[in-house]
Image (cartoon, rainbow, N blue to C red; front, side):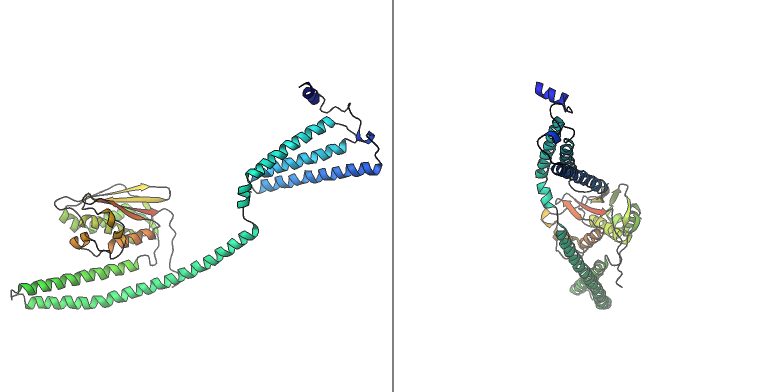
Length: 386
């Protein structure tokens, strides 16, 4: 312990050793070659960390900054040992030289441990060639995605045109059938032929159902074409829907309870259709002799709005809860209460256009709650391909 105290007390002392010029036999060439070499090494070691520090300061997002600082300190101390070796030719501060070498050794091992610790992260870093290859792959994928998008838009246009033509061509014969059935009903109204009246009624009902089906198919095919988003008040949308459903609400004595709804970005026409489908379904699939009560609520989240429409209706079994959003899935309740089984498929498409999801939580006989989300970060996309 006394030696340690003495060492630091005489850290810069030079009385115990002569200058290096006086140790052994040095020629001028040998001595100055030694001195100049040490000074050149020290100069390089001094400049390298300056460059590293400037790099780390300017590139604040550089990976592994701690290793850069440790490596810079290691190089500075290594340079300091060479500077002191050159100075010892005149200033024999061997204690100070030993202390600097000890600091260099400590920082060297800290650097080693830090390097070993970050090896997995360093191996995970991509090389320039790997980045170039990834960029090339991404560009190829983008070109494929653009080509696919163009083709998809073309097919969607063809599908829309087909749906329009098909619906128009199908509507005309159905109108003809309905008109002629009406004439037949007038002609045989006084015959008291019960069978004929029933058959004619079946034809009229089937024709009406077919017309509604074609109409909803056409609406489904047009969802999302040339869609644009604007700022809308959901309270106004629900008020309009309640007005449209006034007749069915009066017939069923339905009650609609709604909380304060948000003002958000969306497509007004499609969101109105969404609320109309869900609320009208809640009224349609009600329990007998029980007043339908429908509750509309919303919850704000970081990136989206979560809406819920809860009813006290007939409910639905768990095994059917995913199928109801698939077009033309036949369910017993739909057959019993009527409907075209297209409305919920339209709801799913509308919610998808708003970067959201829709699902149901329900138990048979205990009502249902439909949940759907609307993104807060919608981007206006218009069909610019003409």
